Length: 328
Image 1: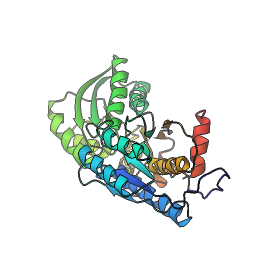
Image 2 (image 1 turned 90 degrees about the vertical axis):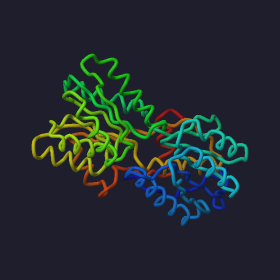
Image 3 (image 1 turned 135 degrees about the vertical axis):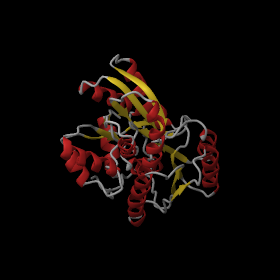
């Protein structure tokens, strides 16, 4: 796990010790978002203690509504924050509020759920690739037949991109056919309920493409329905990985797991601070996808907190290193 480091400031850099960075989060109803918020708190609390910034609070809207998040961002403008880090409810619906922040001289960094407003910075993994890698994995296993797709929160950039990758992969593979699609909202209980509702209408399912936080619920739905457990692509949540280990030990079950690390919020924090300090960074930045394989399952599960998600906490130096590897 990468830990935040206090680094020596270049002579040309602006002093950020009196600056304020806020996190605007639109949703906290699953383990990934909880881990994301905990990661932010851990890293920013140390940054404040080290005198790197004055404060870095996190705010989560009561409802997953873009209008509510836009109002939250507008309040942050009035409260005088120097930078706002956003996990956006929609790629476009909060663009107006983001533009207002930029026009007020505020640095805006979006991550995970990114926004399309040109003045904002964007940090994500290649979510379309994350969707496509699921189909690639199913192909590598020689799977043929019917596929169930469990999507995330409707209208969010992450859901749209992963779905596009899955759809493109299936279109290029005549051996797999999507026979059902439900929104599991990246949450075990919702996914279990939605899959249970659609299973009676489905033919035998060979594989399930997911988006994370839903895999264990999918497995439970198949079990409760008395259906054969398909190959379920997982999303790095501790309950999913624990279930996978149990199934592997009991009957040799094989699958793969991948997700964006919840600590992407900490990467976004350091990006915001670097920009406030005067550094020039690219508008679009990609983080590596965190992958768990059959060979790394035990080690990754050991390092994943109970009820949490396989994670990486980023440091200031990690931003420099990752951007350098990307050619920036």
